[in-house]
Each structure stands twice: as C-alpha cells, then as structure tokens.
Length: 460
Image (cartoon, rainbow, N blue to C red):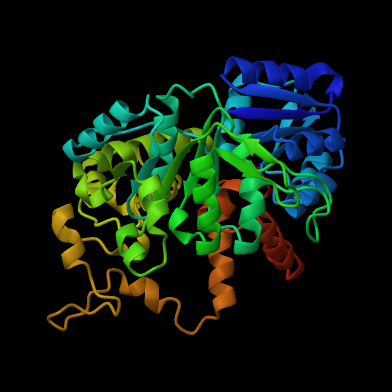
C-alpha cells in the first residue's frame, strides 16, 4: 500500500507515517497540497492520503476530483477538535484521525478507506483448482485474463497474483474501464501534456507510466471503446505509450491483468471487441466460479466478513450460529461475494445475541430457500413474488403492508434514522450500509433537523 502524508503537525504526522511503514506501507511525505498535487500528476501514486487538517482540504479534494485522481483523503489533527473534524469531513475527507496517533487506529483507518484486503478464502474444491492455477502462472510475465460474474472477487484475485509475482515490490494499479467516460479513459491510461485538450491544466502521468515495474489491472476491459482497443493493442505490442499532446514515445515495463464479466468470445463474434486484442490479453485465463458454485466457502467467507465489520464498527465479534449458516448456505447469491459481504455487514450491526442467527440476516428481498445452493438459482422466486403454483411467495408481507399509505420520503427517512441507530450514530458506516455518499447522508440529516426531527448524536 502507498501512503502520502501532507503537512507537519508538530511531528505527530511523521509518527503516523512510521506506524504505516511498520505496517508495510510505502510512505511519501509532501509539505503542502500543492506539492502533493504535483507528485500525483507526475506518477507518484498513492492509495490513501493523510492530510494535516490545517491544509485547505476542500480545495485539495476539489482539485483531485477535477483532475480525476481518485485517492481517499484522511484528515489529521492534534487532539479531538470536533469543529475541525466536522469541517474536514464536510470538505470531502473520508475520516478524521486525532493525533498523537494510535497504531491500531491508523491501521484500521488505512484499511477502511482503501478497502485493501488480499485475504484469499478458497477451501472449496472448485476454488482450490483456481488458486493452484494462479500460483503456477503468477511468477511469469504472462498477461492474464480473469473472468467471472460481478462480485466474484476478480480484483482480489488480481492482487493475489501480483503479490505472488516477481513484481510484488512494484506498484499495483487498477483502472475501471467501465467507470471512466470514453473520452477520458485514454488520458487516464496514457497521460497527457499541459494544454493538450480543454481542461488539461497541467501535465499528467497516465496509469501505464505509474505502474512501471509493477502490474496494471484493466478492470472490465470488455467495456473499452473499439478505437481505444486499437491503441491498447499497440501499447502491448510495442511496450511504449505516447501521452496525449506529445509525439515522444515512453517505454513502459508493465504486466497486464484484465478482467471481464462478459463472454469475450461472444463480444468478438459480435464485433464489439477486437479479436487480435482478445488473443493478446488471453494468454492465461482464470475463470472464477460464482459463489453458488463453491458452497463450502460461503460460511467461512461470511465469518471473515463478520470479524472484519465487528472490528470496523467497534462491536464484539460473533460467530455465525447454525440457523444463520443454514440460511446463508441456502441462498443463491446472485450478487456473489459482494452481496454476501454487504449482508454480513448489516447482520453484525443487527445481531443482539451472542451469535448471528437467521433472524439477524436480512437478505435482499428475503429470497431465501432451504434448497442446496446449486438448486437455489433454479428455485428462486419470480420477480413478481408469485410461485409457479400461483401461491404468494412474499417472505414478510407485514413489512410491505406497513409501508402502504406512506410517502417514499417518509420511508427513506425512517430507513436512514434506523440505520444510524444501529451504527450508534456513526455517519460513515451508516452511509456505507445505505449505499450513499457521506455528503448525501449529511444533507438528508440537515434537512430532517430543520423539519424538527430528532437526529442521533454523531459518533463518526
């Protein structure tokens, strides 16, 4: 992990940097946000930034957004200055860390804001074969194509291969090709010179140069525009890039890992993906199974997430009880590991007993069946909630009836306030569970407060 530290704070922030170094992070120190922006533009990448709260955090975050530099910012300040902490969060910081720093707090914050976790749980026979293949090809320089449904852990597998490779000490850079607009992805990958297009206010190093000596993950490469596919093919063949607005080629030494949740062979046949690029990327294929195809991993993964979010939320760790295990194992998990993780995050907050039981696990739509995972997908209820025999298949009709006659705004307000109660007032964790930004959550709470609604006291 790469950590950038901005500011001084009477030496306390340097102590935080030393703690991060002891935890295996690579640390870069900058005097102020201007120096930090310059370093980021020139390829000194970071996975997280710790910034002195006295710096202009709002302007810095706005500059990062304007230049499409996606790095979470954590504000740091001496003591527990609540006003400074609130302002930093309002300005776009993900978290606030009081200084002098606590080692465990620094480690927890860095893991939370970067969501970096390379733990590979692969006890199921179907997954053991895949991990064995990954171990075999990781030390090579071969380009790797990882396929699988959304949420199956393609990026985790990519990081696993990088950590097992000869490039493990180099950078690991991920680019989501589906999330970046077509007209900006070329600049993101290859960089640009100042003035090369409207908005190019400074020279910017692209992801290929930033990942020199390491690994570049092209996530959902199947979504890349055909015109850019041709340029990518040339880079892979020539091992050099040319920044937008420049005529000077730059040599790059990068290993490529690509992922796709689509059938690329079908995309090639439809003319949506270049055949020559497909063969260039598809030197080794690692097909990740869906979670329902590795049933014996469901409970171990769930327990891993339960422990993770117990630590993150400051609650006691709890084992998943027998009824909870049965419920988890009997569900089809269309959203795969990502859906399981979100479900367990909610469960650890809801569980009031010594164990997480079935009643604590609120699965999306409560589409729970007692069948084996392999059969669950075929037997899942239809979208209308009516079984093939014509009988009702709604799992909790009382919950639906209780919303009849109420406005969407009222239901949304109760959902937000109830989630805040369960997170003990922690705004950050509530926003994560609700799937909204911290700014959106705060705007909603301010609106409710103006309407005279009692708001749970802030606790993060």
